[in-house]
Length: 118
Image 1: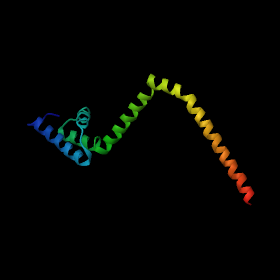
Image 2: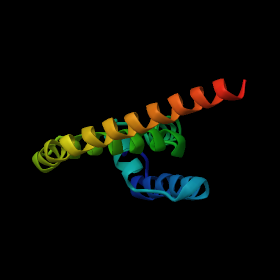
Image 3: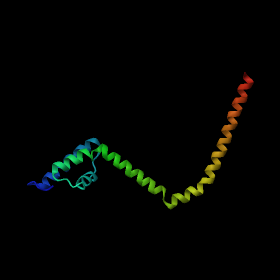
Image 4: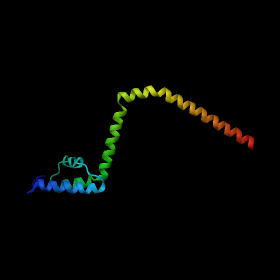
């Protein structure tokens, strides 16, 4: 990767190009560069290709969404959320039952009302 005469200058140029490209798309994050380097590119051209193909803003949105879903799932499995679910379940089930009964009464009233009109 660092076989050019000015490796840090070239790396900085690639990183800056990525930054401005993604900033235009929607705000850059340094996470993309570290992910690109973790793929062990052989040269800076390979790094630039990896950053453009695998870590464009479109692909990063997918990665961020996946990470967000994983975080949400982890939070839902926490003991506090589990306790809260067990505490609220009976009252929610009762609320659903009462709403279902009210809906059934309305439907039966509408049916009987239509029969009287006809």
